Image (tube, rainbow, N blue to C red; front, side):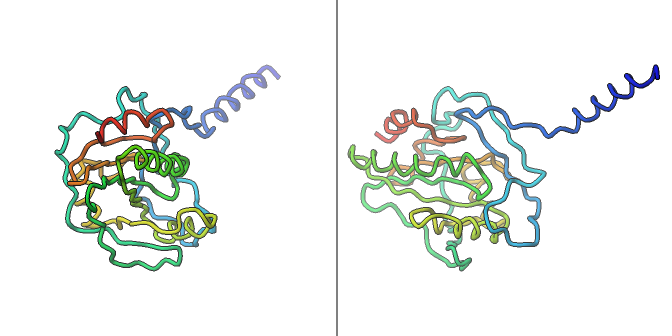
Length: 224
């Protein structure tokens, strides 16, 4: 009987070590690290959680919105265009539109399993409308880096009528490698990330992490 408390204590310690690690509290720089692990063979009916190799990676809170580790205008988008995918799973070649006139470009990198990405979609569209109204016209382009096309199209299919039904897609391979390298992004980048250009494709702001409500003023200033 004298060993029973020790056995109970040992079991409790083992159980606590096997508890899943909870993601850190959501902050303005909360990100999720992409994973190249293959998805399950069955097509999900809704976006699934990140694979076992993907991890929540909340970073230290950002000070400034725009990444200043690289000089402005230093990042160049490659000429190779990502594929275009719709909710039917059809993949087509659709050139990434060049800036028309004085329109800036906002490229948002996301994945169907990235919670912070999906949470910020409405905010990005709202910011674009506010910029347009303030005299800074801008086009928003979403680019997926999902490894599994089935998971991306399932995400589109699960969206409401007014939700995202298509996007560009960087399939794993040379085109994705060229894009991520040109923007000095990691091969498995933390998501979401944003590259915001002026009308001449000069980088004005690179944001690593989710866009938050209080970021509008800094973003507008970067594009002035």
